[in-house]
Amino acid sequence: MSKGGSSAGVLLFRGADNGIEILLVHPGGPYWRNKDAGAWQIPKGAIEAGETPLAAALREVQEELGFRPDGEAMPLGQLRQAGGKLVEAFAIAAAFDPAALVSIEFELEWPPRSGRRERFPEVDEARWFSVAEARQMMLPSQLPFLDRLCERVADQGEKSG
Image (cartoon, rainbow, N blue to C red; front, side, top):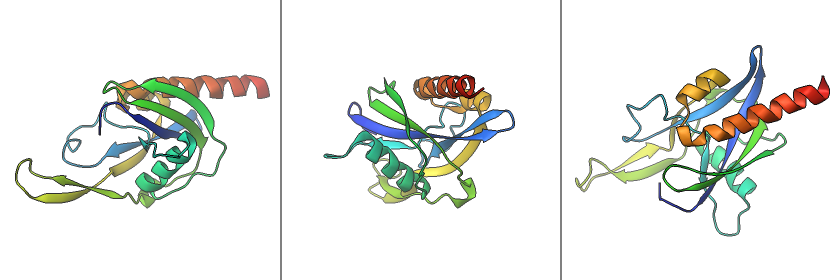
């Protein structure tokens, strides 16, 4: 992941008995292999030239999960991650079975300075979490997206209730 630049992603959610559940992905590759709490993220990636943030976000979900959500996209705004990358996110209600995960791969010299190149999945796992669990597992710099989604869902509940 490069520092700086712009990315877009999707915070997928679904209704549950205890409110909502959040789908997060665990990055693949050797650097993330033994990281759990604080490592899970929203599917996201770089916005390519000529691409809108929403189009980039949907493409990234497709590449990382093998699934394209078709629900209404709720803008969650932008934030700057700890590494300096500006991320714009959208929330979409979706039904996705993590067992159906099919991620594209990336190539990396591994081990470092070995001259050997290996392929790793961009995402090695996807999992549904309660909001409380997501707060524990999510990359800290992406937590404001979770807060914004919870506010939006609460606002919609008040309007419909």
